[in-house]
Length: 266
Image 1 (tube, rainbow, N blue to C red):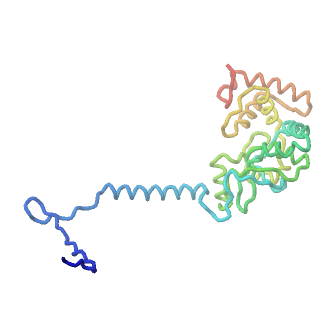
Image 2: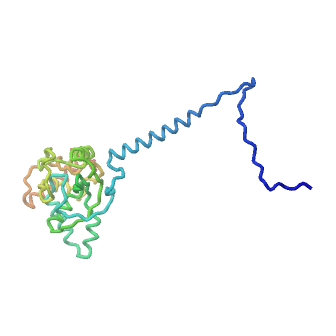
Image 3: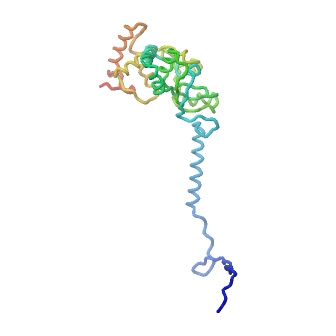
């Protein structure tokens, strides 16, 4: 009886097999599928485009960057406005609403109306929404206010920052007469914002149901300018403001207001 070998026999080396054609001659090696190369190039191109877009938008992963949607508590005195005006009567109305709250209910109310900010060079916070709320809280002596970050652009130069803000409709440099001015005319702080009574008229017309609130770039300013053209001031008394408001509601529902954002007239 033959003994089993305890040694493992090694497999013979594999021979290279040449592909032959029908005539017996060696067939040339086939090139790689071009489709695979194209797919690889497309994937690389897509990745490069995504990186470029992220860099342009300032959303690339940067050390120390504060993510979009981050909740912060910020000192009112450190906030920079991106608008020149507010409506004084509208601010007064928001002060009245806030003062009616109990001490226990105030934190939740402030949190619900968080100020929207964009972080600029050196992480300076610029208010891009809720200017009336923050002005009201400032006048009430509230030192710290809740905010939510819309974008962190602190990596940009001052020049590129303002180019981005203008291109994305995040700054509105118009004075109390509805005239466009230089960006350098923006107030240095919330207290420096000036009164435009037509902004108050516009706000109360919307609250009275004169037009719908819509998501668009500065619809409130468009309505304020519309009323500025059709209603003469001044509105420095409550009676004068009330008369102007009644006239403004009629105008908002009339044919002259067609084409304005949120129009609900015939």
